[in-house]
Picture 1 (spheres, rainbow, N blue to C red):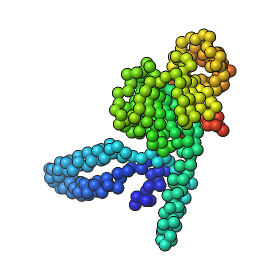
Picture 2: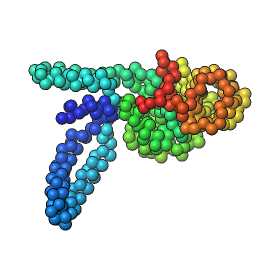
Picture 3: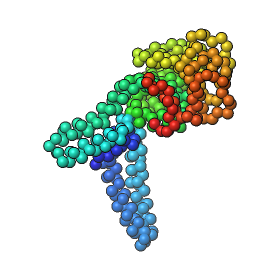
Length: 340
């Protein structure tokens, strides 16, 4: 049964339950007596209600054991593997190949390899070639993911709801199984909880959240303060040209993330002028930032805009209205209102 369910599972969820076969065997041993007992309890309850209730009470113990078993196994490290969702054409192709196997059992090895290749090769190719920046539509703080040919950089996690219902489904769909580097710009990030679900190699944190790293080395391998300049081997550069501005240089793109956009600034360095994208949290930004940096595009990560934005020639994206914003080398900036 599992080979026939597996492609459909990847199509809808993009995950593989690593302990599913063993868990199913254990669950079956408990589920059969519970089901039979439930049928007997229901039948006896129609005749002698007290006897039916007594049988149902006895079933409480194996039912409780069943629930505890499932909870324990699903909470084990590596209980789920993020494979990535497959496209509809892959799903139909895999089932077509598997149907062919029913009529050509002599070539089952070739057919099996073909079915696996249909699922693995497209996802692997995408992960090894994809270059993309994603600004998620959050309502608490900017959350940004940079993907560069299998290398991932995550800036902020947002609060618990953002991590659980925005980040994790995206990682699941994309087949992201680790974070190469994480950058904490806010105090209320959920790095400890995230690291329990997906490995994080390096964590960089700004000075004002220096009390953040309270996780073990097993969860996050390396933790260090975010200094003025970081050059990574994947072509990503992080700089702090201003105490309130983090600059991201990636694929000839210059992005700036404001940490205190409401504060007025004057006499910024001319090197900050002409950024490709300026991004900030919330609905209020001092006009001096936009007038001096003069970005080509500006992204306001906000759940609700109550104050009018300063006049600017930059193309404005407001995540509360347009959804997540993505950048790719050929497509430029695009918006995603629907789920990924």
